[in-house]
Amino acid sequence: MDVINDKEELLEQLDVWRQHGEHIALVPTMGNLHPGHASLCDVAREHAERVVVTVYVNPTQFGEEEDFDDYPRTIERDTMRLRKIGADILFIPSDETVYPFGHDCATVVSVPGLTENFCGASRPGHFDGVTTVVARFFAIVQPDVAVFGQKDYQQQLVIRYMTEDLGLPIRIITAPTVREDDGLAMSSRNQYLSEDERTIAPLLHKTIDRIGAELESGHHEFEELEAGGIKELEEAGFKIDYLAIRRAENLATPNRDADDLVVIAAAHLGKARLIDNIVVTI
Image (cartoon, rainbow, N blue to C red; front, side):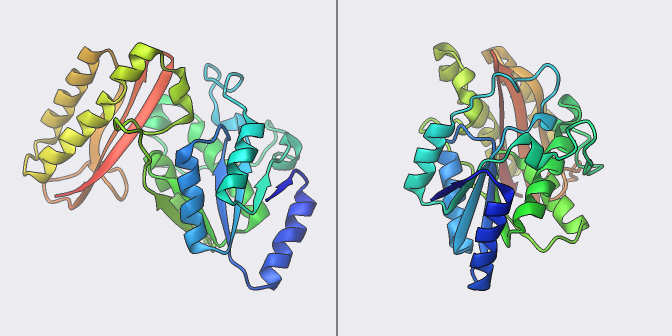
């Protein structure tokens, strides 16, 4: 695996692969890699001969009170993990490479509608930062496919919409959420949990999983199911950001005839903000 910081060096290698007819998959990350990220690389390898992983902690997707300064930066460990996985390139760009005119003067890519609720409502400007940085990596790497995790359900939906709306020739692949043995979705922010909080955290998945089972069994009183889930989590010590049942395709409010639904949730537990979701068919 090559570790590359320079954009021109990256482009030279990508050009060699394209001349040999090889397809390129992109896996954008902020580092602090865990087995969930490894699964994204495995999925990427299924769809392309070459896998490029980016590690860049993007400042424009963090709010003023969020954890940009404290976000774990573990580049040596990440590099070792990616070598074992068998990625072809680890690209670690500088701020100047990603934002050549600086953050304040950067062109912003914004997706209206899909970004205005849920994580978009509780983290104003977050998705503008995500789509802006992803669009920049798409422009630099020009991959054939890009892989994102289902855990960040709204994010992958927003990126799909952006890619289609801009007519980018990139196939977006959503990889399944990877979980701990007790069901907790793997996340770089799980390390913020205290020992006691870690024992409580799996209840988030258990709650939305139970709601999904009730939906599949014919219980379609959506507001009642949402209220019950919120109450259960609050009683356990979670501070709820949102818990909702929505259409899987666009996060719209469903009617009783909806086919594919997603149960999405975000909640604070101590210093950690946990998100999770499941997709169900009714």
